[in-house]
Length: 393
Image: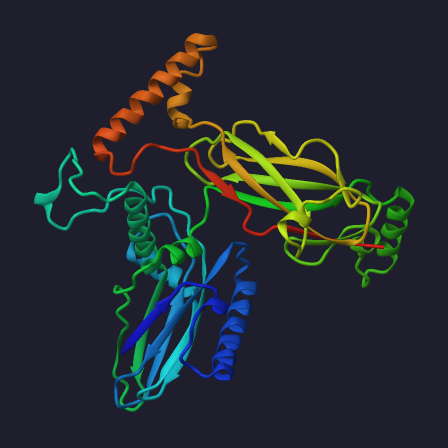
């Protein structure tokens, strides 16, 4: 059984199958995944894994691929088998000498330490202090470590088996030869900061209308209330909304810290006209107006915490607008536990102790890592899916 892998959007990949056949199989796999997702109730971000399987055996083979949810805890074999019971299963029959493209939908993965040292198989090569003698740049070393650890996590989420249809012989697909490119790593990983945008009306429906709707719902149990019909904001997609012009709405931007460390964020919102060149897209005079500033520093965001920023908007003319955003790290903070040790110290002395502790931690980490990862830098995260506003008359 020969195979090739890819972890990219379907529109950017090359296929050896006829276009109609590949589209039909992909549609079948996607429909089965949507049904599986609705039954499981997962609410996550997903990516698409494309596997080209080639049958080099003279008899037809039935291939089964399974994809399960990412798990962070380590458990015994019984719990591991129970998790595979809820996995998404894709079955495919491959004729001799044919190549079949299998589509798997995987939940994206977040790793707390994607730049951890790669373990060595030879214990004699393990050293407490590492001195880099190669000329590999820190960026290349970071990319190499990310590819290793995300590949390791991917192998725990998928598995496959093959069965010979004629005589029932079966075996396991060997997937450990998978190699991830930097583009594949970007497709499967989750950022430290999760950014989501939501558009809500400034004014709720009137009290009389809400009372009438409640009384109607009490009289007729079969009829369900439709609050979206009375609201000026209509959600057309995950981050796409429709509003009438000259209507005040509020854009809520929510940041959630996935990392184990606290982050000091700076939010920059970037509204622009959709599908126009950069010079014309930023010309929003007499088209879109907002209250307040588009750039603001938000309070410290501890590990696992969320914060929300609100900006008032009003569309002055019809059209399609997009609101992107960036989150910049203002300063590098120490770990939460270390910050709690000196939390009682206020004023200049407390700040000096924090800076001294951070400096000592950076020097120790730099000594143990051998400076292979370079200096710590301030990070920037962008909105993966911009908020689209369709203004109508």
